[in-house]
Image (tube, rainbow, N blue to C red; front, side, top):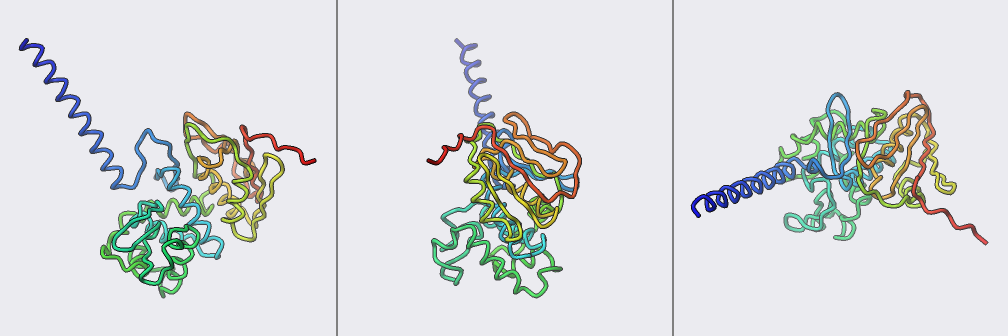
Length: 288
């Protein structure tokens, strides 16, 4: 009986240790604003550093970067905005916060940022952030943390520092500054939704980029190669929502995988056309 008791105690101790390790990892990854290792995720690989984010974070990051690009702002604006939302909300559109703070940027309706509904609308919230950002005299050259703080006036004025390098790489990928640098792994993607993706891209890309759809193919014609790569990466960033099959930019292509991070294959060219196809999209019904 004593031996059995010792075995049971050992098993309980092992189980408790395992639970503690898992809980500790969860806390660590939450602090770092990163998805857990086995979860669906997206990555930006820029300057020998890989930055992982969840598909939900990728969706909001794509909107934040898209709004900056629509306004003709340099990638640095996206870096500052992404560092801000990393710190403020973990890059998630949350409906709670300190006092009346809400949304991605934790903007406060009582401080003139907008209504509760508005500050939780990602496009609106991003636009209001950039409205304030461009009024900071040295936003183009000043320290990213200090510029973010000048906009946010946070009670933790140095909180943005630890997110700057990740934000810089995400911005470089999603603005198209670094081609073929963004990918996603989604183990159970939804059915392909070309109409949904086309609508998202039309709302998110600058006016100089033309979005069209023919059946299950979405095409983006951009003003230059950088904007084309931005469109391609923003599309991939939303794979978990729209179920992409393949994305092509010039001589390079990305094919969705459910088992590994799909690489961009081929040779980079200065192409300005992005072609997105869907393997499992419903066949459009012919109009009568």
